[in-house]
Amino acid sequence: MQVLTKETRVKTFLNSIGRNSKNSRKSYQTSLIKFEEFLKPKNLTPTSIIPLLTKGKINTYELLDQFVSYLTNNGVTIVSLKVYVSAVKSYFEYFDIDIVPSKFRRRVKVPKYFPDPEEPLTLTDIRELLEFNSNHRLRTFILLLVSTGLRAMEGASLRLMDVDFNVNPTRITVRREYSKTKRSRTIYCSDEATKHLHKLIDMHPSKRPQDFIFAMKIDTREPNSIYNRLLEQFQKLQHIADKDARKENSERRKLTLHSLRRTCFSIINEQTNSEYANWFLGHNHSVYWTHKEQERREIYRTKCMPFLTVYQDTRSNTLEDALREKDKTIKLLTNRIADVEHDQALIMELLQDGGATLKKKLEEEDN
Image 1 (spheres, rainbow, N blue to C red):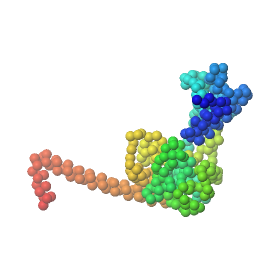
Image 2: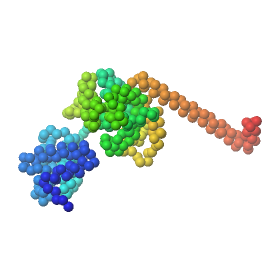
Image 3: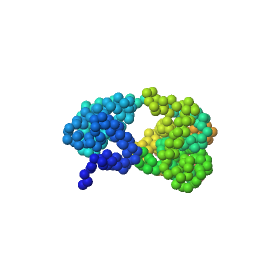
Image 4: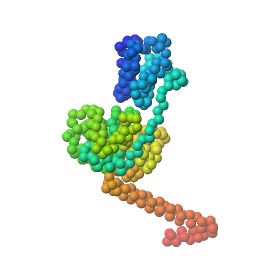
């Protein structure tokens, strides 16, 4: 077995983290850089601290508590602080330095986090925002996120081959490589978003199946640049529309691209149920909740799509279609109720006269 040298400890740990997610690797690397800055005045490094902790020359809990104090004094937010501490704990445990959870809670005092409620975003708010937009690519991206609940990176990574316009509503396949949960899924988008997708694709410099839909250059290989560009344009739009307010004591904006995902979830949850909403957005849901693809598509078309349509003209047409479907269902149920009432009347007559009246009626119906 290869013995880890001082030069390979951190690298080996980060490589093990990166096998599942490149983003996680970057996050852990940032955390260890912060830890390295904390250790520098002590003439220590993340590599040299491991033997000292293993031999018990430095108390693990005291070191972590000092790290928390260091981060707090340097103005690190509570959310980031928890990420950094969790990553350092994972780094220690990777090298067999056990951390007992009960002792950690007792010895290391991490500030408590009380998140502010998220700013609700309605379709009216989205319409008002889009009034200041003249960028068709960004408009399409926003309408797509509203109607699908895609994460921004999932939307930016869509290729032409991932969208199936041959079914109604349009079917979209989210690739596992760019999904947060590393699981692929199939969802749907509104007719409104489909209309704008067609326009954007017609403007596309290349129409190869493997090309990214929102790419601005033919030779784009990764969606990160697409996401960064769309995010920059979205933030400019927020500034123009005067909707770029930030949360109290935070650099984060009240309205983000992720707010569109929350709006989608809220609407789908209200129109259907939490199981369908969680499945649609790629969250964990009950293993006992199963429907065929055609049934899931029909649920979205009739119950969700009318309320995920932003512009009034498209929304009105979609609502009319949904109302026509409901009228058909009501008429069908009314006919069934009438048949049941007719059968009940015959049964009552049978009970009352021993079947004589029923026999006569049946003979009349046969004639």
